[in-house]
Length: 331
Ligand SMILES: Cc1cc2nc3c(=O)[nH]c(=O)nc-3n(C[C@H](O)[C@H](O)[C@H](O)COP(=O)(O)OP(=O)(O)OC[C@H]3O[C@@H](n4cnc5c(N)ncnc54)[C@H](O)[C@@H]3O)c2cc1C
Image 1 (cartoon, rainbow, N blue to C red):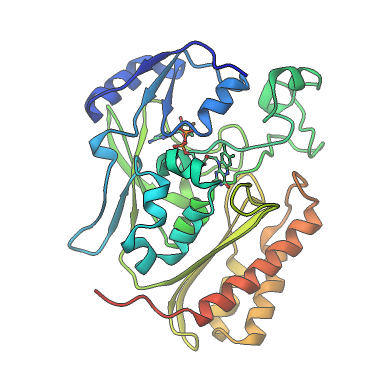
Image 2 (cartoon, rainbow, N blue to C red; image 1 turned 60 degrees about the vertical axis):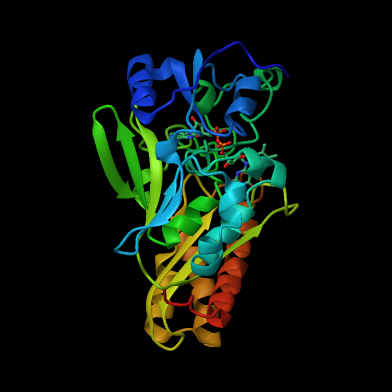
């Protein structure tokens, strides 16, 4: 498959990038590492007239901690560098595990964090060649009015499967966005929408600049169930971040990925642990509760019953690993 022709912009500064983005509108696509976008261009899933490369912008670079202890990771950072970054490995092990779980080493060598955060949803009816898609009736994502996966669905149910996202939501991360109109910050959890087409709230002309992780000493874990580790998207993933002790946990966020059109926070499972502490019995109860937390899940890639059983097992695994993990050392 060949790439279509496109103009290529490589701005030298963020201001130049935002000015170009502000005037070009939807005919221009933002390019991070291109590991997803370029494939979508080959599949003719997207047809931008021009690409704007942002991964070398200095304003999108760097991993730092400010005086208040907030971690800032630039959106242009390469996943390979983040997966082995000493600060992430020591203080945010769940995030480092999640980043290491993205694709293969070759993919991570090119891919950026910003691209992972903005990864479009996937579906086996749309992530195919143009010819293959042409042999099917169109669906919500290809200008039809039906979902081939869930016939009764009133919108696109393609799956969100960006591995860094559940790990960052579990850490209560915030997103820094900027356009030529100014800057805004929002919780990463609020960035995603339950719609396989418009699956985030990035406004036209806006760029993801950085992720901000608030200061907290948390234990954190990420696990992924996939057909082949080291390459495939997950059938289901689960991230957890826990504050406090096993006996008296103070905070817990459990976030499932690759099971629906957006990441899902498992509130009931977390409530059980926060009330009873991390014991064998509470872990079993929390794993059982995940089923209700998930609600309706898609039958895309695996049957929904299987996905729910998988998440139940992942909850058990994450909680047991959190229980064993030592709290990261204080500064
Ligand atoms: C073989 C293979 C296996 C893969 N496996 C996985 C996997 O297991 N888990 C997983 O999560 N992903 C996987 N991917 C998908 C992809 O490689 C990663 O999600 C990667 O992190 C995307 O980053 P990128 O920089 O290459 O994004 P790009 O392809 O450059 O961009 C992706 C999207 O993000 C937008 N974008 C990029 N940067 C910004 C920014 N700063 N601001 C606003 N929008 C932006 C682009 O416009 C585009 O819509 C896989 C890909 C391949 C080819």
